[in-house]
Length: 116
Image (tube, rainbow, N blue to C red):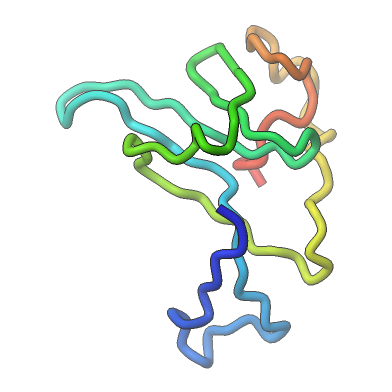
């Protein structure tokens, strides 16, 4: 889930000038159901709290990293590592009213990194 090296899959002209080719899994969109109907949920890594969160409609719950690896994964979202190998800044810029109605164990801050 961390440190996916994409350098073997990039043409030389497409590589980052700084040589950054390592990516960390940031979010997973899951589909539960059939081709004709179903339900979508998401797992997102929150850098501010250093934990994975499961989003299911209005319910947000922390989960263990092993629970993120699921056969229901539909879309994987990766984030390129920074040069400093540090975590990105928390998303404090999202107004608190944006989270009204969400049942979150973290309160109203630092909930989603997939928006970045």
